[in-house]
Amino acid sequence: MTAAPDHLSVPRHAPHADHEPISVHAGDGDAQLHQGFGPRVRRLHARIGAAHHQAEGMVFSRALLAGEVEPEQLATLLRALAPGYAVLEQWGPELAAALGAGALPWKSLERSTALRHDLALVANLPSRPPSAAAAVWIEQLKALAQHAPHRFLAHVYVRYGGDLAGGQQLGSQANAILQRHGLPGLSFWAFDRPTVELKSALHGAFEQLDLSEGEDEELLEEAVLAFHATQRLLAELGDRP
Image (tube, rainbow, N blue to C red; front, side):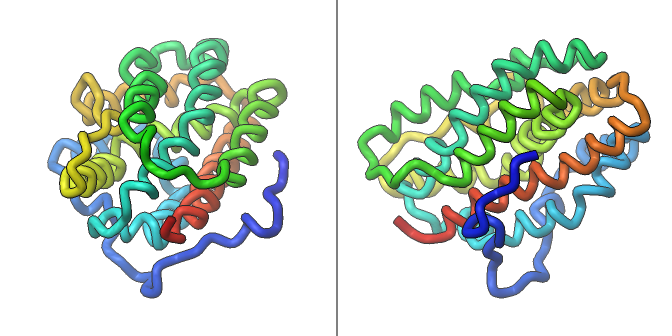
């Protein structure tokens, strides 16, 4: 996997590293789902736990959850994410099906349509230079799609799993911020099916992946690297426009 440039490699955290995880806000349905995790998903969650906690502790994550970011920062986030989701959704369905996860509900999971809608809404907000962290992530995804599709799917799991979980709280705060500024809400974190149902489908499909023992370990390794890609993006966003 392509290494990140040195100036992108150190994530920026909130002053207090110990914090309540966003996931504590999950409802009873999520708790029941957690109890029903299959062996691969349990291994994934065990491996990514520390990186997940770190991502939640980033300055931007905590500020967004507190309703303290600016609309321009949200616009920057959407502009950085859109090309990556385009790559995930260009390659993801074919690669997942080839490795045994054809049951992934792509029609409901895909975010590119929502991102195009949201980007039009924020088109008049000031732009920052293109995200360096996002550019690195996109090149990583393209390389993995060609040479290590099981690793590519780790990014699928981290991105969509995050959107369905903690992203729901972040999305509510993002829309509240935009409403305070007289702007319409975003569609990015809104799904056409219940999130508990989609999370169950996502987990079930990943349990069906037909991987060797070595590929399974690499899937776990890449899931951590996928969180690191997110951390680099969040570090960029930590500075107000």
